[in-house]
Amino acid sequence: MGDTVGYPRAASGIVFLKATDLEGVRNFYQDQLGMTVWLRQADCLLLRHGNMVLGFCDRGTDSFDGLLTFVYPDRAGVDRMYQRLTDRAESAPEESEKYGIYQFFASDPEGRRLEFQAFLHPTEPIVSGCDLLVSRRSVRRFLDTKIPEEKLQQVLELCRYSPTSRHSESYYFVATSNRENLEFLAGLRGSSSAPIGEAPMAVAACSDPSKSGGYVQDACIAAYHFILAATVHGLGTCWMAGMDRAEVKDCLGIPLEHHVATVTPVGFPAESPQPKQRRDAGSLIR
Ligand SMILES: Cc1cc2nc3c(=O)[nH]c(=O)nc-3n(C[C@H](O)[C@H](O)[C@H](O)COP(=O)(O)O)c2cc1C
Image 1 (cartoon, rainbow, N blue to C red):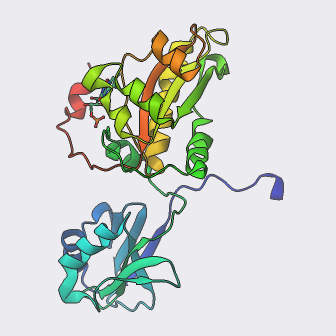
Image 2 (cartoon, helix red, strand yellow; image 1 turned 120 degrees about the vertical axis):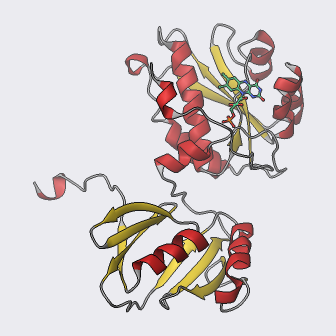
């Protein structure tokens, strides 16, 4: 055994804290901070904020000498929390040059010190599978910001794990940031393809039929894998239909016999689409 076995896959983690008034804790963390109840366990209440799980246990004391930091994707998130917690805040949000963050401090009803912050530089994303699946939305408006090469590489690193028929790995991606190409692709299907013209980049998810009988499925799954991986890294995408056509292949240098599952615009989102009405889970299965 020993070193050759390595570590098991990391699942998650919980920080447990002593509390005096669990109901007061629930009120504050759920109603004021928007945490959700993840689990009730004997005399403990487990609450989650994104990927952070805090377990508060009734221990008749609230001694705690640390800092609970709630991280938001951007400054606007920190500002919104400040609006909610102005009464409890030590001061208004400000930048910390030392740590490269935008932050403010506050305290909870039992005196624990809280920090609300956004990183001012890119970080490795930490997003739970559930959050990813629930939060992915089609984005059709984008910031004019160029996508750093490093970010695209990080997305592609995740795309390596897309499943394929008989492990053929028949899929590949073609990216373009050429403005003429983007305008051309955007104009192919009227308003349906127009979002490509709003983005700094478009990516075609393709597959090679000589490598797999399941090449159409391979390309479709790889396309969705790309969409999810891009979402993990804070990029917006939108599936564009009807892109398996000669004009697209000619524009992007894709062999005519290859399949193009979609060409998605890719960029930093300039919109946060509102949640859509979804069917109940029970009606999904027959
Ligand atoms: C197969 C497929 C084809 C789509 N075609 C287009 C399209 O051509 N243009 C477009 O703007 N959105 C297109 N969409 C995006 C859908 O409109 C979108 O997924 C749907 O409205 C649900 O919204 P959501 O993605 O934000 O959850 C397509 C989505 C799928 C899955």
